[in-house]
Amino acid sequence: MKKTYLIIFTIISALLLTACSGEPSEQDIKKALQLSIKENNEAINSEKNSIQVITKDTFKSEEKDIILKILDDITKDIIYELVDVKKIGECVSNIKEYECEFKLTVKNSIKTSINIKKMKFVQLEDKEWIIKN
Image 1 (cartoon, rainbow, N blue to C red):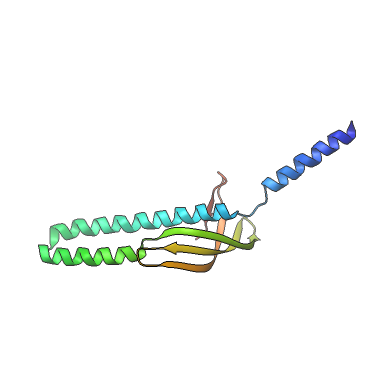
Image 2: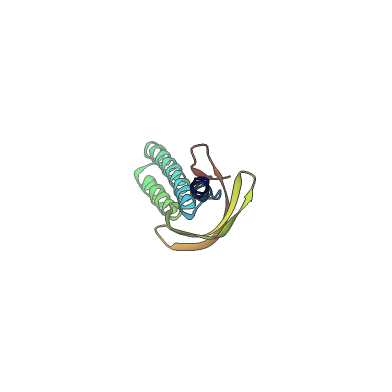
């Protein structure tokens, strides 16, 4: 009987330890990056909308068209979409944060960029991971 309890305890312990590996997974990193990119793109679009409103009420038609064309050209270069994330090795732990290295693929309207990045991640109380600024 004791042997059965020991086996059950060992299996449960192994499962719990596997579930609590500590560091963010590749999916956690991707989700945190998607959130960060989304927030950045929303901020850019909000500023763009503000400039469009100011331009509409301030400038003549020809000037307004030029400004809005420049604004569109600028924003299409800085609005990004996450294409892929590949975690490279293990993350380095420092108390409650993890520094992770990963291959990041993003694209905008002009090009696709692939870079190796290192970023720090922290886990919130709700178990979600975010990028530490």
